[in-house]
Image (cartoon, rainbow, N blue to C red; front, side, top):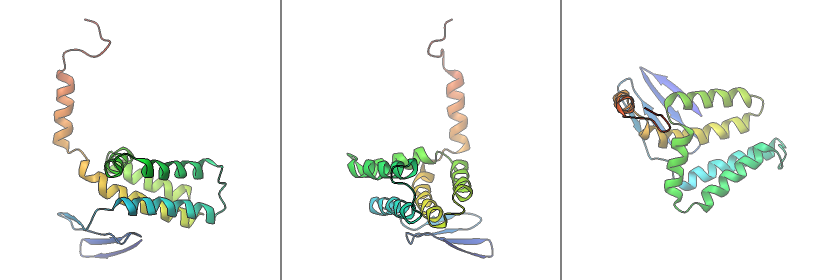
Length: 155
């Protein structure tokens, strides 16, 4: 991923050729990742694991194999990738934490690190549409607090 900074503008290029332009006032994203691009990113993670001779019977390889199979077998793959992205990144801080953790965990396995980050970036582009605003969180909290009773709660 390459990053260039010019006058409050950052341009990020991911491995899937998506360009995201951020300015201080707005964000313009060109093209959401497709199902095939997400699947290809997951396969790249597996290939990177193989490149570092990570055991095929190990947790890392098994988990990524399972994820690829899930996406391939999903009844509605497009809905599956949206729900997966929302679960992976319910908010901006989760995205930043997972990226930071990945950079730390795989700092000596550069290809694995880059492949996972590329996958995360694609999912972030999808998930950020569904992040709740402060106003939505405030309303949800108030609705919760105004509910009459909780399950299992006795009067």
